Length: 354
Figure 1 (spheres, rainbow, N blue to C red):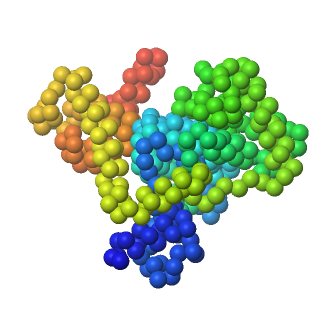
Figure 2: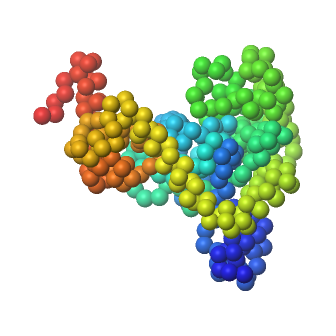
Figure 3: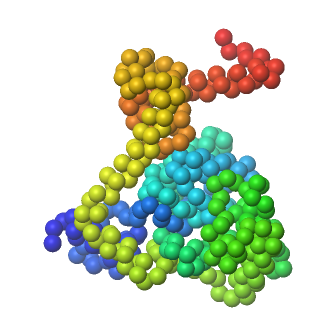
């Protein structure tokens, strides 16, 4: 058996998403990092804690900032959120990824929130502890999504943040309350239909939402009076689903192509955005080389690529022929500042910058 195959098998032994003690000692030398299973339409339960279990949310403004950042991540990646719960020193997300872009999306989400949190509190350094945990969920409609979403919504009960008899809606920082509100008052990236469906609720109506509340309050009583629910280590689904994932991870050809496929998906989206912007501007590809680095049209395209894709500043600067990523960062900063200034002037506030 060659080196690569030993490495893949060791990572898949017992758990494809973590390195555990059941991996034979003879294989351990080949293991470096956890594997991330990614494929179109995958569903995950994601969780990440603060470094040394320190707070990642110091107040409600931090929580609002995190949810805003989640929304931006969804716009960039196409993610759909089925459930979330924000605790003091960790968070839970149930995410569906129409494209295989979990790693790129989580890198952007955690990195961006860390920068914003540190800027807000005048800190520096790591915010999150190590790598986030990811549980792959069988999204076949056989009740596994319901299991994991209920687990996330009941997390405040297990943490004893609600007293016996207190309503589950009294905890304000999970998606549960949004499930009980009318559609127009929810986050646009929160998808409720699949969880309702697995609860047997046919319509997102007043009656359907009341039925969901009734069921969840019963589940809350069960959680209070019985042993707390636990999630498996890496996969929640049928035995066939688990075997399919294991087979995927020990398939050398598939594993070898996987990283390339993920990069190609991200780049394809970026190229689609670029092509659309070129059509809007009436440009062809050669126009990028003829125009100066700081051309307003290029800045416009760069802004949209930053907003809607996970491509790096370096990639955008190179693709649009805008010089270095440092120069692009400078251009985007001043463009944003100019935009804020124009809005203030429109409201009668004087822009004092020379």
